[in-house]
Image (cartoon, rainbow, N blue to C red; front, side, top):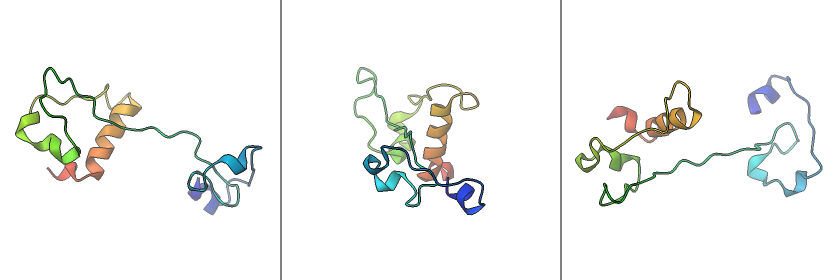
Length: 95
């Protein structure tokens, strides 16, 4: 990525599909591309939760007490640790 480029650890290479990769997902000079992006979302059991949370801050409301779970153990699950990280970035870590 950008730090490897800055440290001179990689060289430029543009794959044959370079022009179809969005500019936001690649280095202009060909030093890196982002080839995978995950998306976090809230999955809600409407039988148990009346109204789905709109954002991370909503999860701090009393309505959601004892209703939030992670998709696995954050020490072994990328999805779970990314959820913890996203919550922290949103300000949830201060709560």
